[in-house]
Amino acid sequence: MSDLTLIYEGKAKTLYQGPASDEIFIYFKDDTTAFNGEKKEIITQKGEINFQISRLIFKYLEKNGVKTHYLKPVDERTILAKKLDIIPVEFVIRNIAAGSVLKRIPVKQGFEFKSPIIEYFYKSDEMGDPMINPYHIEACNLCSMENLMTITEKTFRVNHLLKSLFDKCGIILVDFKLEFGIDSQNNIMLGDEISPDSCRLWDKVTKEVLDKDVFRKGNGNIVDKYKKVLERLQEELNDKSQSLC
Ligand code: TMP
Ligand code: ASP
Image 1 (cartoon, rainbow, N blue to C red):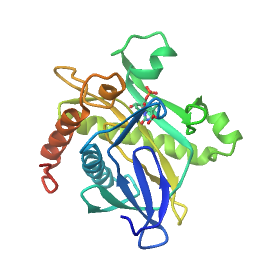
Image 2: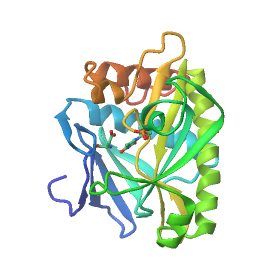
Image 3: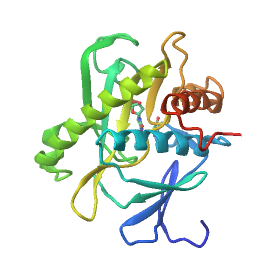
Image 4: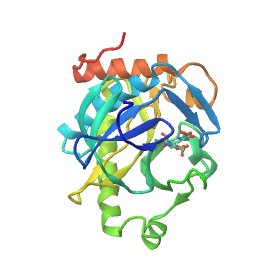
């Protein structure tokens, strides 16, 4: 990747200019961070596993009619994707109570919401990704109300599809975060990654935590957990083309 033009170095991924002006290479790093980068470690193989999980999930979503930025794999931890103008909002869906929501509403961890909840966060490391609402989003020109409604609908659709996929893998989709952007033809597309870095995933039977909370809470190595997620997705989606080790 050394001869490519760097576009942006994020906490877990690096973006390089792709072969066409509206394409980018997304390189998945082993860097693992939490609490806005306060906790940081390099965890061997993490980038490779997240690349494979994201690739499988993006392909599954595309098959089910969700437009994503994913184009194709390039090597064992890089994808070619459409270049998007990313909307600086994190779209979070919660099916089960866990994480930051426990500080805001009177329910205990593990409470199953009657219906999924969507929350919006302003993407800003400096400000600690504060929670915002649709009025903030429109009033501050982060995204038009029309696009926000379209994205909200898409986010619920992705939840429906992913909940069902993970359920077949014996995994509960507790919550997750999505990012969207606009491509050069003005299409709204799902971007970023979908992996155990950006989702909470619990084993259906044992309730074993299979996501980045293991790192956040210092409860062991995430690679074994992430591998379990990948293996189950490969099994379910019949994809062994990039199996690990
Ligand atoms: P939260 O409970 O910390 O608000 O996180 C909700 C979901 O969003 C959880 O699945 C983890 C994911 N997430 C990210 O992908 N990036 C982030 O920066 C944060 C804070 C959460
Ligand atoms: N993604 C954020 C970070 O890298 C926060 C988190 O996932 O806990 O610091």
